[in-house]
Length: 392
Image (cartoon, rainbow, N blue to C red; front, side):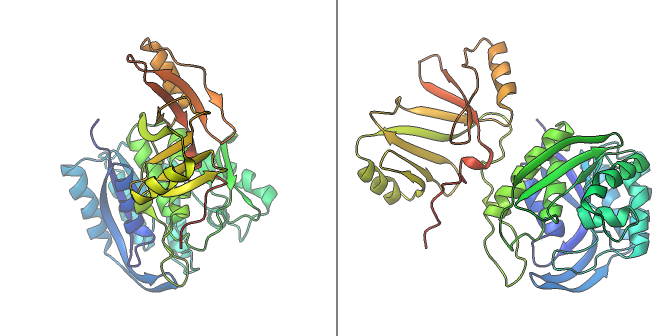
């Protein structure tokens, strides 16, 4: 298919953790083409924002028009706007008929460090943009501001999101990272209530700068590809979670995530990224594959081990008396859909089975009898709960 083209309207982050820099990394790692209309330049690092210089509304709009009239646009992501006048200019440009594409609005108001990135007039200007959007992605403090409240009690979040969704005519993805608890719950809410909900264990890290920008850009990339909204959100959430786990630990404050280390973790079509081989001598095989440069990420009782390559692919060894021979694994985002598609093509595939190690698998063989497995694993391929600690 044609590479999806995502136009990102947002501010620049000199530290590279959020803003345009995070947006470009995200779309690029997902295989799309990122284009930009920069609204403001910031001087910032992991400790905070030291300065902001907004661009003129005219040049912001000109950047958008230049991209749209030449390269074309499949989706738009809007982030930090830099002022009410810029917000109005962006809305005017989107209203001219050249942008009949999905629009994802991330109503950026406060940086992870606590710096204010939108004044009251800019927040008020979000209303017009929100009514043009396919999705709005506020965190809990942003939802409160959009609802005209200082804060929202837990019981008030869903009603506030329903009312806001009804007012703008678009669903709202309420991000739950600011809520207390070990489980982070994100909810897609429309005028009639919750459409979908995702819950995952909180990843304990201070290197979370740019999560909102990254999520919104990943959703925009998915919508640009024609994915349905819920699938685009699920894929984007997985991208964010892997990037959080892969944060490089830079800076002395809220550091950037590891966008560049999200390798083969967000598959679209079937992706071969895991092979299991029988082993007759577990210890010797461990030494062998480590010597080749692979990193052991699982080692279970002399029976099983999994290795990871620098590129993100994994390889496992299993005791020969338990192994079923060599098996190649092809990861898919939608296992049930992939099985149905294969069967429609006349391929015999076993029914999907949930495994105790957190994967869902459906086994099959190619015409030569080679053992294959379609599977979905999410974070569990490279980050199972029993993953070995990173080597010092």
